[in-house]
Structures are given as C-alpha cells and as structure tokens.
Image 1 (cartoon, helix red, strand yellow):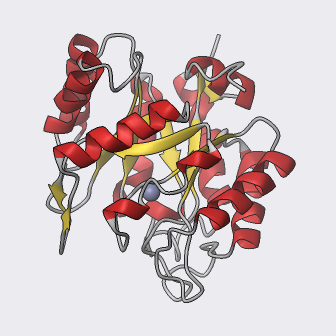
Image 2 (image 1 turned 90 degrees about the vertical axis):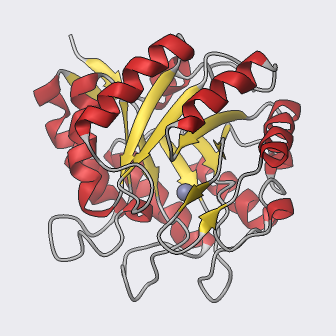
Length: 277
Ligand code: ZN
C-alpha cells in the first residue's frame, strides 16, 4: 500500500524573472499552460502569484480570476490556491482577490526577516485576512516562516478565526528565517501534533534545498511543494527547467518512500475540500 502525497506546484512566485529562469510563466496564458503541464505530471494543487506587465509582482484580482478559470477548465479538480504573500504589494491589496473564492489561499501568521526586507504580517492584519478567508469559504494554508507562526496558528484556531484541522506549510531555507535542517522539520512535525492535532502538513525547501526537503516530506509522511517559485536559478543548469519537470522529479522517487502522487480527488479529501462547491 502506498500513501498519497499531495504535490503542490508553485509556478511563478514573486522573484524569478525570465532572465533568471527562462521557463518561469508570467502571463496568465503561460501560467495556465505551465500549470496544465505540471498537472499532467502529477501535481494536484497550484499556488498562484500574478505579475504585472513588466514582470514585477502584481495584485490584479482579474488576473487571478483569469488563471483560476483557465486552470478549472484545463485541469479538472486541481486545487487552486492564491498567494496573499507580501512582496511588492500593499497590505490592503493582499486579500483583494479572495472574493473569487479560490479553494485555498496562503496565510502567514507572523512577521519575519527575509534576506533584505521584513515580511510584515502584524497581528491585526493576519486576523483580518483570516476573517476574510472565513467569509469567502477559502481554506488557508498556514505559511510557517518562523517557529512562532505555528503557535500563532493554534491561537487563531482558539479565537475561532481558523477552522481545524488546518493545513500547514513549513518554509525552510530562506536566509534569516528557518534553515533547511531535517532536525528542525522533525521538531515542527512533533509540535504540530501537540498544538494542532489533526492538522496536515507540507514543507517547501528554497533554492538548493528544494529536492532534499521533498525527500524528507515523502519519508516523514507529509506533502510536497515544488516549482520555480522556490527554485530560483538553482536548477537551470541541472536536472529540471520547468515546473512539470520539477513535479516529475518527485513522482519518480515517490514509490521509494511508499508514496504516490495524490489525485485531485484524493487531495481534496485529505484537505477537507471535497464537496465544498
Ligand atoms: Zn508564493
């Protein structure tokens, strides 16, 4: 028996440019195409950022909606997750597309230093964003960039601002934030069982850590995230150059860990998204 593993593909992100990473999709058409290739390769969840015409991070709700519609049409059942991440966006824009009711949206539950800036998520902003997700029936993915964010998520459950069981994403390998250390991931998984019983989890390894973290997740019973968002420059001259190829790297080794890629229907079941429409 193999256990299904939800493979998330983070197709675009805020940082890679065509110069850094030629395969990064930046227009809605390119994003739908790249998502479809990743879906065919075994991804069941897509994490979406939008870009402006000049490739800088965008926030246009209609662009989010266009990608959402394209993915729904071409990738039946795939879970659609909008990013509410902050880079290059004002706080009031970050939840400005939630009325389109994606299946999920990312939610960081605290602030953290990034390599050259502060990723600001003040308590009142986090609570307002969580409330908005409740209002539109959007399941948050809790982005854990620092250890306190795990406990902050548990407090939001107590306050009724997050519905249990929550889904967590541990982000490992951003300079100044959590390092990509397996001992740390094991600690987070253990703590999660205590403070957020029944929660599901995945982890993302940034840059050169991506594939190591994928393997830890397969082995430790979590779900996997890959994609060019997290893979800036690193893989260009190595094994993978597209989102689909990064997904395939996980699919190819999943069986070695007693895992298989979750179908979209299985992924929805695991995350409690089945029959929500
Ligand atoms: Zn993102």
